[in-house]
Length: 135
Image (cartoon, rainbow, N blue to C red; front, side, top):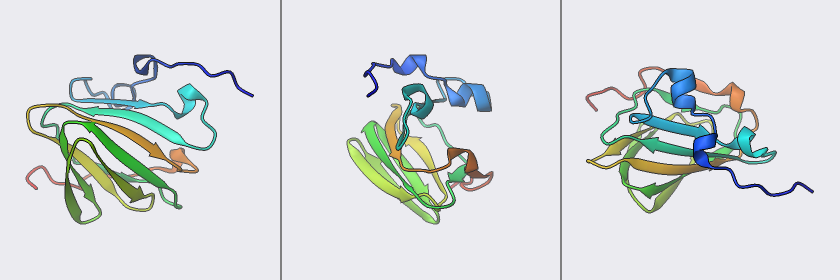
């Protein structure tokens, strides 16, 4: 059996900076699955800066699901063609096959913990203009 260890979120790779070149004040996305050695569940810490607007959508084809738990702030989430309002604390489950994107609302950051059962995270698909700036 593995020995439990505490991981400081700041010690996990920031995918927003490393993969997309974004500043932490805009988007801080810590994918913890590998850093924690998870075998059956993915978990992430995601912090959207105040008013930050994501236009790119993503999905995980082949099934599975993700649960987005908003622990701080307010946000809107677009799942396929539906836009929903979220205020902390709240949560939503999204099927892996559905495109989704999130935006922070208001003057405070929106902080999420995301957990999922996505079998192959490397198969993630992106949709560049999923949510236009003016929507």
